[in-house]
Image (cartoon, rainbow, N blue to C red; front, side):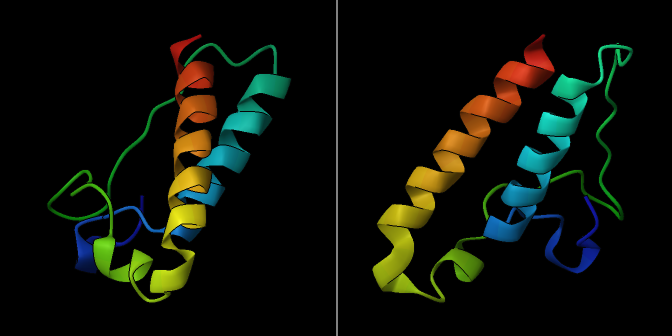
Amino acid sequence: LNRPNKLNALSPPMFRALRGAAARVRSERDVRAVVLRGEGRAFCAGLDVKALMRNPLGVPAAVDELLAADRETGATLAQ
């Protein structure tokens, strides 16, 4: 995670990037471990609400996308 100025808070583009990385990991059968690290003084402050609220009308769709990405990524990392 490389947004130290935002304490690595997760924005929609970061969720999409994590989802893509999880898909790549899923396809690589030789990968046995994944290490996530946060740049700067915090690993991750959680959801970047300010970034999400830039488009308030799109929040429901964005939340659905984030939750789907979280379920897929979490399932992949749990394996």
